[in-house]
Length: 357
View 1 (spheres, rainbow, N blue to C red):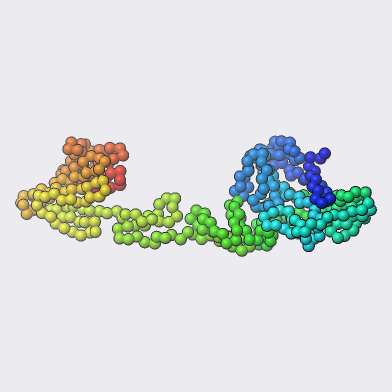
View 2 (view 1 turned 45 degrees about the vertical axis):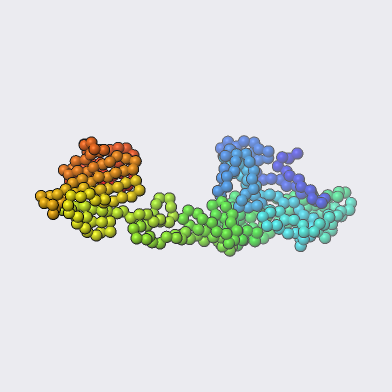
C-alpha cells in the first residue's frame, strides 16, 4: 500500500488522495511515514513541539508537522460529498464542508447517479478543479481522486484563481485582495486570532480588530495628566504611563541663622536653642544653635540626623562628623545604610532612602 495515499469513504463514495511531498528544507532529512522530514518550530507565534502535528491557527485547512527543526504544512483533502451542491454548507472554524441533508449515492451495474446526474460505467468526470471521479464497472462505489496543495504562505496571502485547484501566494503589495468570507471577520496579530470588535493590549498600545481583518492600534491613554502640589510626574522604566512621585524638597539653614523652608519661605531664629528642622517616617533632623558674641545673634553649631534603623549622625562646625558620639574620618561609608563625603567646603550625608543632608 502506498504510504502517501489516503482513502476516505462516505455514503459509498471512496475518495483517494495522494499526498505531495515538499522539498526538505534541512540538510539531513529523515524518512517519514510518507514524506522525508526535518528536526525542532514556530509559525506566526505558534509553537510546535518536535515530532507533533497540529492545526495551523492561520488556516483551519492546514496541518503542520514539526520535524528536525523545520515546519511542514499541508492542506487537508476534504472528502467528496454525495449531496447536491445547494445542500453543501461550510461551518465557521472548520475546514471541510458538510451536507445539510443526507443524500445517498446510488448505482446500478451500468450507471451511477451522483448529485442528481447519471453517469455511465467507466465514465470520468470532474467534480471541481481538484477532483476527478469515475463511475466504476460492476461496483456500488464511485472512485474520486482529489489533488492536494502545498501551502507556502499564510492564508491571508493565498488567492484562488477560478478554474485552478491550488491557490497562489500574493506578494506583499497585493494584500488588498479581499479575505475569504470564512475569515473576513477575524484578525491575525503576532500569531493570535481575534474576532471583529475584539480589543487587546500590546505593550503601551491598545489594538482593535476592525472589518475585513484590519487592525488599528493606538497608544494607551494615561489616567494621570498632572500631580497635586508637592508631586511630580515620573516616567519609570517598563511602565507605559507616568506616575506621581514626591517632588524633591530642600530645606536650608544658613547665616546668623536664616531658615528657608521647603516652600521657599524665610525665617530667622536667634538664640541658643534646638529646632526640629524636618521629620518623617524613620528619620528626624534637628538644629542646635550657639550664641555668637551676643545673645542677640547666633549660628548653627550642630546638625543631628537620627535614622530609625541606623546611627545618630552629628554634623559639626569645621567639617567635623560624629557617628553615635564618636568622631570619624571622611569619607565614611556604612554599606546599605549611609555615606558621608566631603565636597569642597561642604559635607554631604546620603542615606539608603535617597535623602541627602
